Length: 142
Image (cartoon, rainbow, N blue to C red; front, side, top):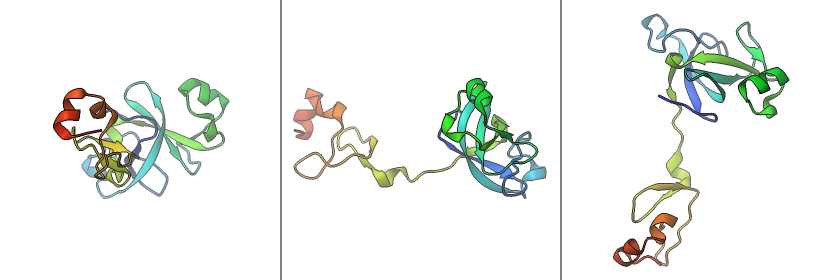
């Protein structure tokens, strides 16, 4: 699975901050370890992710000007710490309550984040459906 900067990934931890970054997430030897989510702040090649952590440990590295240039990380993280983790050590993406701040288009049924009702009857129609003449007539969209 492909993850992106800003995603929160679920990883196994041996203490609150020490990420188990070099073994498969489903390795039976580590199933008893707790899980915790970490934010992706950068990508390293296609199969490694750079995760932001809150404490310095032996495996973490400090984010400096050199690491910003090397990994194209946002400079707002300067002075903080990160890990590089293999893709197979990730258990998945943390589920976000996406539907709480989104509305479903009454035509195409796609969820649009931060949308507001834009029809007289309180429904929401996305821009694509509002501008498509076929849908305007069928669904009485203005």
